Length: 541
Image (cartoon, rainbow, N blue to C red; front, side, top):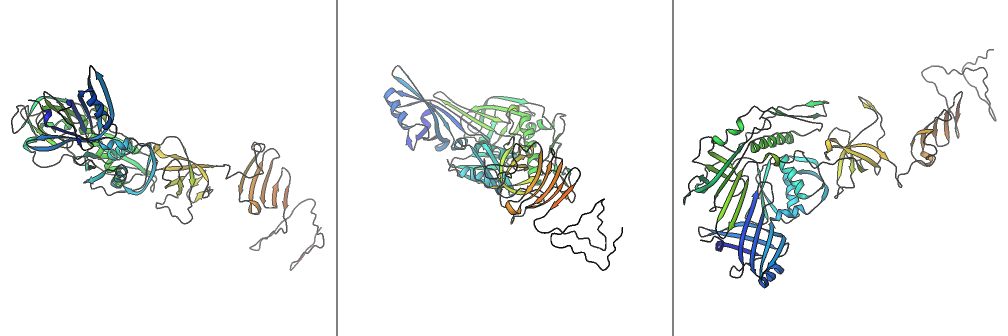
């Protein structure tokens, strides 16, 4: 008996007429933290296919339902992303590639800053921009001071956040809703429809064939993580342990306990927060378990399974039976049969992204923001900057690399608001910017008295402009050192010192000390008068 008449397919809420069109094949794929996709082939008379072609192009909404035990169950929902038509001998085939609405997140390229936001807030923001809503049961509350999405799609940035927090994102029957949960095996009794046995029956799902792949884990559960402790100026290793995660039980759960793999240790030059460190360890433990084994079950198509569901395997061997979390579901429906493939675990080559955030390599331009009335929320002596390549122009707190920074000692030349600075990022993580230096530009020009003709022989420090300008100038050609304040100068030459003032020069010695002027010839001149006053004056030869 054909399974296909039980399929109900709508394009933009218009039902496909199976009296006119023939459904040749339907394949769907749905995996944890991946975008569900479907492959649909429809055939029919040439003119009929042309009519369908004109109304079902890319962007067309598709809902595929299946009647199971008298109940209409959603098998797939999404939109057409690719259309392919083949015409042969008056019969035409129309092939659709369909993806869940999450694929909209792939059609973006953003660079932006998130401030004082939790990962749940960020994920909700990413999804809502594409008309999707989030059902959250993760329990995450930690708020990032600053987090950066850099030159990547919203989907890729979402994957980084899922991995960093050991989260699973799954779709629901509602087209615009997705679910967020912590990666773990749900508790409770496995329903009869989720019990997989070797024989097929009305009550249980019969396994057509099964395959177990087991690997030595890349490391054992002894995972430690260290990070840079800014306050104490040393590497810190908090006493953190992975959460008690489990993705299989019974004989299937014993696999991840075997082997003598080495312990794992991660070292970060970043000042990471405790919540983030714990989530990182949990994600590594989840990866360790999920890649230790991969199981493929092919069953008769009776049920609608979802990634994250738990199935119970029975009737093989004590080491092969047990409960396990499904990570991927595939359906293949033709006129002859409906096959369902259930996959548990992950391929070793498909491990999730190891970095905490999208990497920002090289250096960037930054603009110093106003900081006089802003206090660094952490005692790191940072300045707020804006990085022009980030779309939303939000500020980041950046540390400053000074030529000298020691205890109560500093080379205190901080840039001014509006200055253009060169910024690098610790471990390519955009949350940890460091100002390396500042550069002149057509707006913030260098002092006019210096140019490429003076660079080789003149080194200088100049502050202020116009009448408030102050300069310390080293001239290696003339071997002089000048200290200049407006029109007042102190000039040190090879064999002499010249002091010049616009109005007055004062030499004052305090604390009852003395001023000694000693030279072979001392010449004191006054254009109108010379005044020498003291309680006592001694003139000696």
